Image 1 (cartoon, protein in one colour):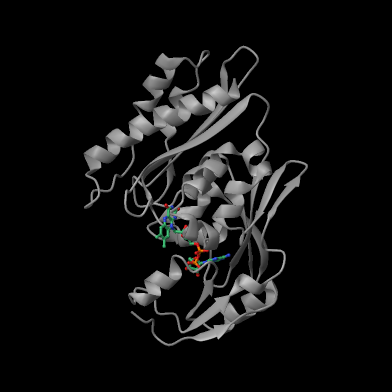
Image 2 (tube, rainbow, N blue to C red):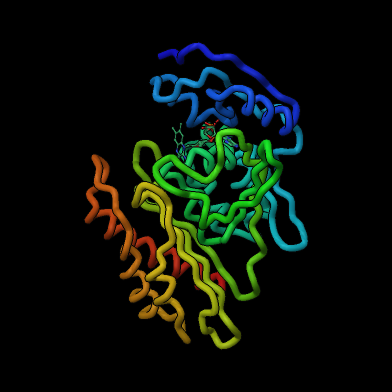
Length: 287
Ligand SMILES: Cc1cc2nc3c(=O)[nH]c(=O)nc-3n(C[C@H](O)[C@H](O)[C@H](O)COP(=O)(O)OP(=O)(O)OC[C@H]3O[C@@H](n4cnc5c(N)ncnc54)[C@H](O)[C@@H]3O)c2cc1C
């Protein structure tokens, strides 16, 4: 299968990329190409212009700053999975990256491409929500920061405008006595998440929960937080019974998908089981 004809540009800067996107209304950014090119080959996407951001310097890599991690949009899944800084500060992100697709996908696919594509079964969105990540975007009007809670909107739809480039993701360092974990039930063929859950908990000196965030992906048409579970986790002692009760609520309020891969009922069950696993792993790390 061959894509339709398109013009190809490889700008050397974000500014140049934004100018190309502004000038060409039917343009699309090309990053790792592992979501866009398959869509073009089956003519689900037919951009007249491709703006390949792969040659722009400084958009790739993990930087450690005073208050956390900054990850360039072109950083590949493999780089994130292998980063000692990511493993030390955001174990859940390292786990999610390592579980994406296969080695070939991880070597080409980028975090910026994955977040911008907003696939309902992608792994990173659950992690971004649980870790309160912020996305930096640059467009014709300059730079802006978008909170993860405002980023994922609906099926394949997120907060970026057509002329904006996602340049980096920022994740603040977790407070002391915090832990996070990502677990998923993968589709056996593609490895996309049938259901993926990321949990983050912070405990005080006596073991009471001071903060809990749970992100769910794969279950609905876009990633969301399990707010009923988060509320139920506000307990003085985070033991197995408290975790089980909170996990039971993980599907509450979710608009669950039903498709050839899994019924809504089965997804609800998976969400509860995997929420329990993610919270238990996060709690163990926090302790
Ligand atoms: C066989 C296979 C298995 C996979 N399995 C998984 C999996 O298990 N879990 C998972 O999460 N994903 C999976 N993926 C998807 C993979 O992670 C892709 O790499 C990712 O979704 C897209 O990243 P990319 O860099 O390839 O982006 P591209 O395909 O180049 O672009 C994707 C979209 O994002 C836009 N875009 C890209 N970069 C930017 C940017 N910086 N700013 C604004 N817009 C941008 C593009 O215009 C396009 O619309 C799989 C893919 C394949 C082919």
